[in-house]
Image (cartoon, rainbow, N blue to C red; front, side):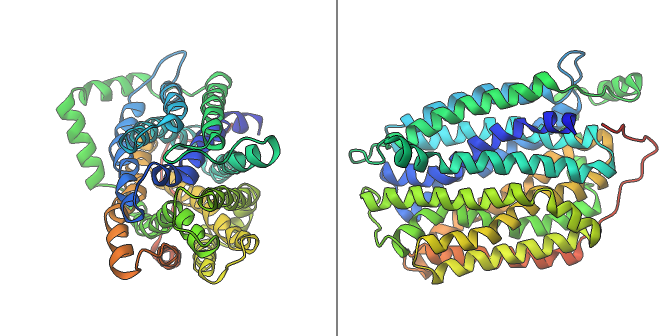
Length: 436
C-alpha cells in the first residue's frame, strides 16, 4: 500500500493545479472583462490542448525507457516544471488575451504530467489491484482539489487577504492561491518521481526491435492512426459514457460561478464585491464535491465488487445529474452544498471506474497510448460545448447560466444510463503483471 500511495501522490499536486483552474479561470476571465456568453470560447484552449497532447505523450511514453528515469516519470517531471511556471503566471494576467494564452500553456503542461499517471497504474498493477490503484489516485485527486478549491476563501476569511481589487485586476486571494498551487504541484510530482520505480519491458530485445520497426515520424503517425481505428470494443462503449459525462462536468466548471452569482447573490456584474464573494463560495462548493470524491474513493471499489463496476458508475452519474439540476431550485447558499455531495459521488466514480474497466481491456504494450486516446472522449465533448454553450445560453436561456447547469445535469444522467452498453471484460494476455 505504501508503494501504491507513493506512485499516486503526484496526483495530489496535479489536481491542486487543476482545481484552481476549474474553480477560478471563469472568474479570472470575467474579472478581466469577458462577457458571459463568450467565456466558453476562451475555455477552448483546455480541451483542444488535451486532444493533441495526451495521445502523443502516451505514444512516446510507451516508447521510452531509461535505466534511472524509467518510462513515465520523465514526463511527470517535465510537465510539472512547466505547469508550475504557468500556474505562477496565471493570476498575474493583466489582459484577457494573456489569461487565455496562459490557460493554453497551463492545460498542455498539466496534461503532460497527468496522462502518464493513468498508464503508470496500468503498468505496475495487476487486474486485482487496479481498481484500488485508481481509487488511490482518486483519493489524492479529491484531497488536492478540496484544499485548492477552498484556498481563496481560507486566505480571505482566516488570513485577511483581500478578495477585492480595482476593476479588471485579479484579487490577492486568487493570486496567492495560484502561487501556492505552483509550489504544491511541483513538490508532489517530484515525490512520486523520487519514491517510485518502474518495471522495464518484459522482453527488452523484442521491445527494442518493435521500437526500431516503428521508428520515424510517418511510421509513428501511421501507428497512432491504426491504433485509433482499431481501439478495443470496451473502449468504444466507454466513449459514449464519457461523452455525456464530460459535457455535464464542463457545464458545471464553466458556468457555476455566474449561475450562483445571479441565482443566489443577485448580481451579473463581474466587477462587484458580490460577484467575487460568489466566486469564493463556488470554491467552497467545489471543495465539497471534491471532498466527497476522496472520501468515496475507497468505498466505490467495495460497492463495485459487491455489484458491478458499470452498475456503480450508473448510480453515481445519475445522482450527480440530479444534484446539478437541483441547484436551479436553491437560493440559500448554504443549501447549495447538499447537491455537491451527489456531484462528488459522480466525480469519484468518473475518476475511478472507467479507467479500471479500460485498463483491463487494453494490451499492456499500448497502455500509455490508449490511455491518451481515451482522453479524446473527455476533450471532444468539452470542445463541442465550448462552441455550443455560448450560443445556447444566449439564444435559448437569455444568458441565465443556471439553465446550463440543468443541461449539464441531464447529460450526466444520460451518461449514467449509457453504462448499459459497456461490456466489462479483461484483456487476455500471457504475461502476468507483477503485484506491487
